[in-house]
Length: 246
View 1 (cartoon, helix red, strand yellow):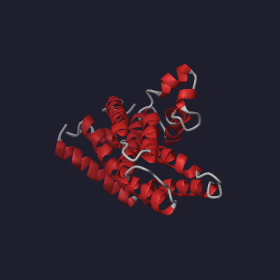
View 2: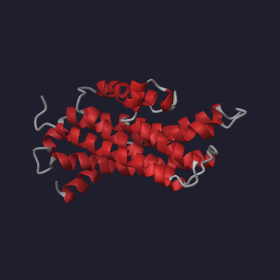
View 3: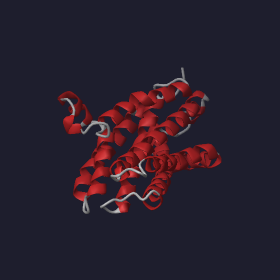
């Protein structure tokens, strides 16, 4: 790996994203629209349901959006031969994967700030913990979605297949992360599976920030698991890169 090449790769991807206004809108606007719709649904609820489910979904939406955007963008470069040509240069697989992670990590930061600010100051989301920690978790969660999207793109042959992989990578995590049924009420096998899925820790961290005034001690282990998953996904994703496209 070469730091200069990695940064050049990240800059190239950011330039491409800057010219793709629809993708930028998808990353920045869609999470806000979904959070706003959710707040509207529960606006007349006698109990403030949005305060209980909003933080958890603030961890789900960035992951889903970044997964879709990253998997399709990477697959497009695979199918057009761009990756094949890039890999004939001094660019290494690690440079490519880390460059993508850095570029989409920048977008994840912007997305997390916009979505968190919208949820707190527009939708009225009330959290007991610090808002900055909410943003940090959202950023890590979005980068996790990026890493999983990079991994999924290695198994798809078309953009349609990349979208089809979303249920396989994301939906099981959504069902087992504790949003539908509390994890401690699940059958033992499902609870054990949920204990290793990264989205479970994102939701747990968001809930800790929402309910605790000093949640850092509980949040840090969850962030550690999510970061480990990011590293594993990037390493596995780099193994799917080939010098020649079949």
